[in-house]
Image 1: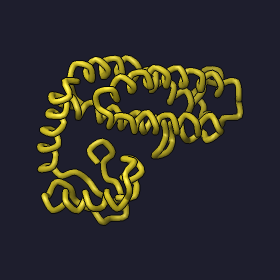
Image 2: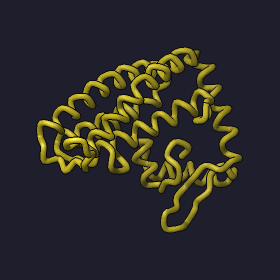
Image 3: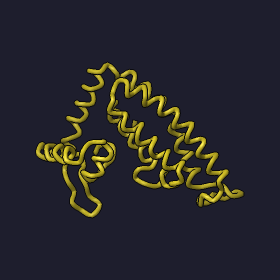
Length: 192
């Protein structure tokens, strides 16, 4: 919830790769401790409360210290940051292309253009998958990002243009959530 924001139990089940019944049980326990709250509005969902952030921070710090992986995860995060501008540019180039001197919405009718952008995404994916393999060796909870990024890339290759940057399961959205998870895990605020 911390990395995704407001989310339904069903969506959280997909994102965490846990059975929905187990997710609902966990959410009820978290709500009982006032660590999570359900916003029933039309765009609502479950979210972490301010009082839930502190124990989450403590649990993440303990997990890093117990596993002895703080240095490794921080090193992976620094290399992730090096990839971040490239991924953001790829997403931008996927959505828009230059026609003459004018940025134009990419309608995906230029197969050569899309193939070049997709080739760049595949190279970034190879690099981030290597980083995730390193992270998973210490903290297996990062494995879900390998799966979700691979799935988004596979769907893009299969012709689903929205899986680069335009839907909840897009490569960009999963990348953003991974970035948020790394920040949270390392106790770094986004402003830093």
